[in-house]
Image (cartoon, rainbow, N blue to C red):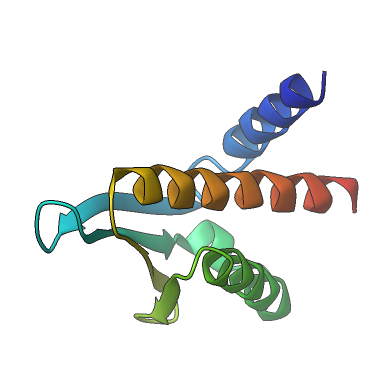
Length: 114
């Protein structure tokens, strides 16, 4: 039941935020096993028009999630953020990406309750 609820929350959030955030994601390899997941998130004008404090809180939340998987965030511009999550092997890639997504879902769930 909890899993279904989380999926529904993600779908509702995705529907409500359609067009508010543009994102691209890729995997960069340094060698056969080491690399990093790199995601660039860009806020559109629609979301940028929200209060700066709300956007700053969202970015702080994202920073906490990324640090939880030993990653980094870098502010590219006022509207763009780059997320980098390193991995050392296939299992580490799976674990870090799963943990990051789980933290994102939990964060969305908490925001929905507020």
